[in-house]
Length: 114
Figure 1: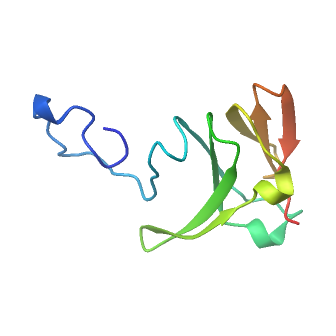
Figure 2: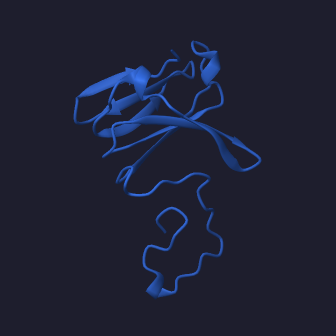
C-alpha cells in the first residue's frame, strides 16, 4: 500500500485486515513520510495530543489530532521550526517533549509552540 492506495493494483492483493492511514498526501507534497509522536509534554500545552510528522523530501513539519478515527486540525509548524530538509527521525524524552532530526542539516531540534 501507498497511503490508502494499492501500490501495484495489478497484483490483486487483498486489503483485508489492513488499517488505512487517517491522513495522507500525494507526491507533489513529499516523497517519504517520516512519522513521529503524539506530543505529551508540559512545556507547550497547546500541542498536547497533536501527532507530529514530516517528510524526508519536504521541508515542513505538520501535526493533527485524531477525533473519531479521523485526522482533524491539520497545522503546519514550519514557521516556528524553520525549514527542515531531510527529516529522518523523531524522538521523545522522559518528560514527553518531542525532538525532530534533520539528517541533511545535521541537527536535532525540540518541538515547541510559538
